[in-house]
Length: 224
Image (cartoon, rainbow, N blue to C red; front, side, top):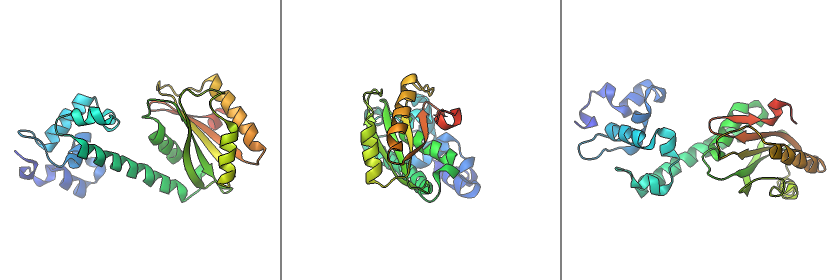
């Protein structure tokens, strides 16, 4: 039986409108995204099948194009639609940050940086450039690959900070291993950047290390 024949209170779209998005399961939310099922399977059934096949919602959302498009009921059009949806979410978080002081929204900063870096299969070093009032100017990824003291260049970070007229920065990078615990190399990089930026009166407010479901703050550790 198709979803349109279900009782109205059980249809995902109507349930969302009447009870709010929090009332829906992962499968129901995914079914709204899918819109239609496949022969013999409703959109909710298909959503459940996909969540089981991929191992969960996060794995599905972070699948690459080949993996995603190979699944029954999906394809390149759905992949493009999903990527656009995820990017809209990231840009929405960025616009929320841009409206206020980054230091008054630490949870939002963590969530935003995690959304940018957590899913990457390689190490990436990024910077949130802030003005003197700690409002967001821009987020930029500056270095990628295996990060150590030889591959992160303080002069490049300082140059970009000056170009953007930044008064402070928040540093961030990910650990593809999923373990967010900072390494000795992470601490050395942070000290070099802090010293270099101080020459131009640019403060390093924090350095976040993004792992799998966890984000470690240098400031909270008392390392800045």
